[in-house]
Image 1 (cartoon, rainbow, N blue to C red):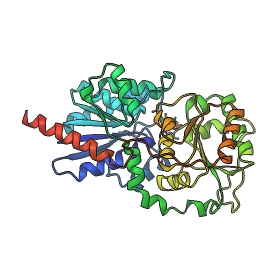
Image 2 (cartoon, rainbow, N blue to C red):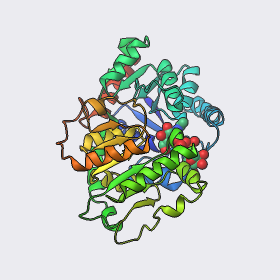
Image 3 (cartoon, helix red, strand yellow):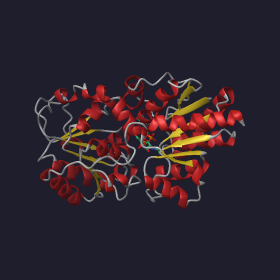
Image 4 (cartoon, rainbow, N blue to C red):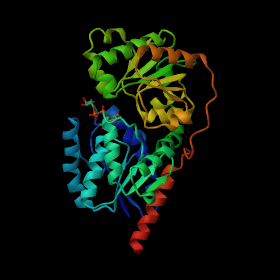
Length: 376
Ligand code: UD1
């Protein structure tokens, strides 16, 4: 059985690593990797391939940045000949980025079955590009692998055939476990002067938070206020960096000195690789983020997470995890962070099936269906 796996942007790489490993360990499965190049900088893509031991891609499509239509269309145009040449039995896509949707649409039009890992998540906010990507990818997929019960419920409500839906757990948590030796060996705390002190971690990149100057300025003011109480480390996404540099006066108030031996304030650093970033998150007193995946990783690690959004497509991180949805009002962000800093709640147990074995379950299901198709 030949499975062609599609990677596009940073949050895809850690999800694919355990899956590709599992496929490579199974006789009878041949795994190919295609990198669309939606993310292309070393610190957004290259270092993840190295650290997560992803195989060299069979094809790199080098689509780069662009508008949604351009990026989606370029992936489709460049992937189609690769699918025609390789004739895979299945195309596997993960997550909700533009490359996910583009690859699924290209495959389905060539009548190649599609597997979607991390299916069924819904924020119900159609202004999020990812929500459109999720809805459309799920409408096309033949295998829908869900991470939490809400995923199954959403898909059934949308009329997806129950036989296509498989509740398998979370491959992002598989990556956390597979690469635990790597991230526990990281020296990031020493390099940032954070050994033996309390600190928080911040990530921000959603267009709704960073593209609007006023929202971004309010959030930065809130973070600056929090950082007078506890140092905050802020690995800055390229989208956010370009918006910050156009905000008058803001960048001069942010600390850029990565070498400082005494951490203070809001410390902006380059985007970090997987081992350094997970080490930083695992040791944090609090995480403030608008990321999707980080809500899950903090839940698995038992680290309090405040999500700077009005909604989440991952409700299990709130009902069974450490996540709270706090919105983007500066006052609320500050108050909620101080509340976390004053509390010492025990971490709840992990959500069902977030046990590090999701990739095994997924590949077992795909292999079984593959051999049934051969027999038929
Ligand atoms: C994309 C995903 C988002 C995901 C995020 C993770 C979509 C619609 N969005 O958002 O779901 O959470 O990745 O990071 O697919 N850039 C660089 N170097 C890179 C990549 C991007 O400088 O390697 C800059 C470019 O200026 C680019 C901008 O970042 O225009 C945004 O990149 P893009 O891939 O369009 O969206 P993200 O905001 O990264």
